[in-house]
Amino acid sequence: MSGHSHWSTIRRKKEANDSKRGAVFTKIAREIAIAAREGGGDTDSNIRLRMVLDKARAAGMPKDNIKRAIRRGTGEDKDAAEILEIMYEGYGPNGVALLIDVVTDNRNRSVAALRHALTRQGGNMGDPGSVAWQFDRQGLISVPANIDFDTLFEAAVEAGAADVIQGKGEDDHEIYTEASDMHAVSESLKEAGIEVREIDLIMKPQNELTLEVKQAVQVLKLIDNLEELDDVRRVFSNLDVTEEAVMAFAATAG
Image (cartoon, rainbow, N blue to C red; front, top):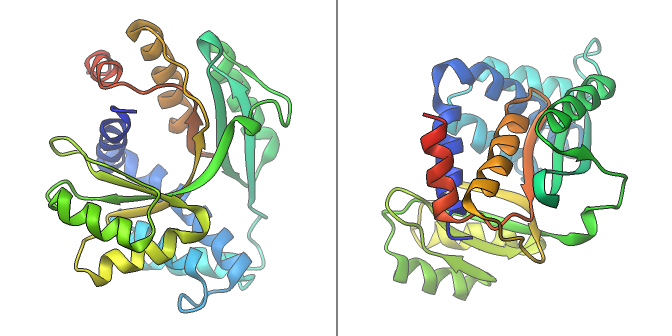
């Protein structure tokens, strides 16, 4: 997964683009609403809400938008439509397994958009359970690349991290944890004076599928298009995301 961090950097830059910020705010607002619905609006007791609010502030989301999203989740906004979290399964070109993390207030709209995007680029929807068994839920903590890696490695391992991957250039260092350990490891890093850019629960493939660069770029284009959809929060795959494939994708994307 040598190119995974670089792929994350590309995604983050796209989200920072002014023309994309409105769509990013919409996605984050739905995440806030779900977190508030499940654990209440108090960030002291609701770790998930605290995590999403950190993401919202990092994205520059206005305070009023955040407050409205929390009210929607806690039920104070009686007119708001119900928001659903759904993990759809599917396949991309060359048999790559996909998990598509969706947050939506309209299931039919989401399914239609996913099906169209997949079939247009050589993929297809999968039945429930057809893909999910190939992935494990893990925590992912991103740390800016200007943090000394040796210092980070020692602190992360001491805190209970499962793996630490060094970023290259401007790409983040990545710390993988058991899902249940993610927040504890993150807090330990902060206490050690290490900046944490982002924490997230991800679906990590048990085994990765290696493709030729041209084939891998096809899959990355599909993933990119899926993540452009308003209802899609994140796409996970079992593609071996190499640095060569990411660079080739970036070249085609301009």
